[in-house]
Amino acid sequence: MKKNLFMVAAVALVAAVSCNKEGLGYNSQTPSSIVFTAGIDTKTVLVPDTDGDATVNHQIHWESGDEIVVDGVTFKTTDSGAKANFTTESAFTADNDYYAIYPASAGTELASVTVPAAQEVEAGKFNPSAVVSVAKSTTTSLEFKNVTSLLKFQVPAPATTVTISSSSPLAGEVSVNYNAGEPTWTGVNTVNTITVTGSFQTGKDYYIAVL
Image (cartoon, rainbow, N blue to C red):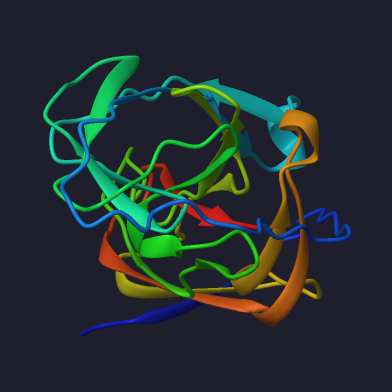
């Protein structure tokens, strides 16, 4: 029998004034030869207070096939590792002020970035398509910083669906302010509940991305 479990997460959230890039530079009509080199932040995990430690750092590496958006244009990598080179087949004009979003599915501009309210996860892993980060640079070197945290949970009985709820927003559309490498966000159309699907077993750790 399938069971639906309901869990309540107490998540601290920070809101700030948003920013939006103007004058996007991608109006040329020929494929771009520009290459962006990107690094990515560690992932911060929210864990129960009973664990005795409020955060756990998890290292993440780029994987071949990952996509980012730079000034509204999608770039893709064939590299794997702590740093990766991203290229595009689309038209793109070099600028001196770049904004970038990972993953590409999260949005095309900082004024409208989405953390999914429905996530599918496996034991001991997180869903990379839900973990949102942003970068800002005046060069082609990008260092992505987290917009989301990872919430760790376990289940008291086997299940296929878990609902996590909070009194504060957990997911949805937000406007992001890069904030000198410490990203903050302002809610645009947020929700206080995330639905998680998977094959949940007792005694195993699961992770979801939350604002």
